[in-house]
Image (cartoon, rainbow, N blue to C red; front, side, top):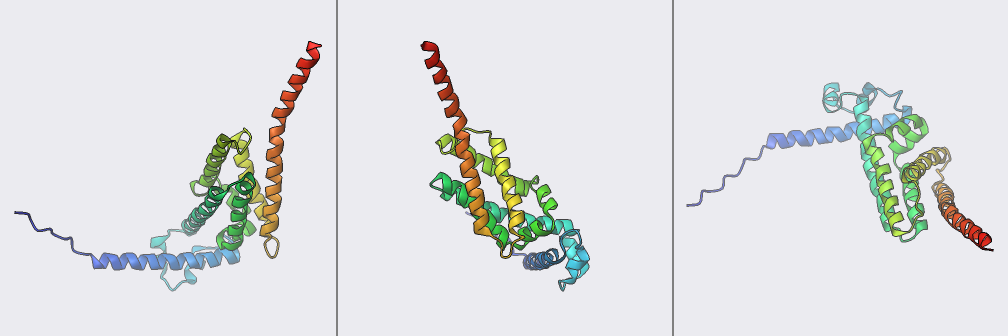
Length: 226
């Protein structure tokens, strides 16, 4: 005889606790976004963030031990959404121009819209540069390198040093974004157009040494045969 299936009782208390913590977590992160936007990360304190909520200090410290934990969570969230947009733009590309232009436009648009990314660039550019070495943001550079390698294999890009090219494209994105956010309103279209022309022209020039070297060698062979 088959034994009746015993269902595990639902722990309603645990569900309520998880729901409460999720709501408190969202409240703290929203408050932190406001504080970091107004005074910057360095000047902000955990107590400043707590005061923007209706939560007791102990509840906030249980979720986030310090402002660095809050900041890291905000950056990780922004990084995930940014990587998704940029990767999608590269996946949609059907030409070299779209492959270069689309991801930069996605990046600059995100920076102009996302308060954490925007205010990091305006107030704490050194912090953002350091965060590029962290897994959350550093992964986007790794993904860029993988997509560049695939483009070379397809013949869409010349054979180049992938480490240099990925570093250059990522570095230019950050440095141009630093200037872009200083303009009111942020010049997303201008920044995109400039960087796209810069790299499209540069990639075309990277093809030339191979052709030049080949023509020089063939010229030498013709002269020596006379």
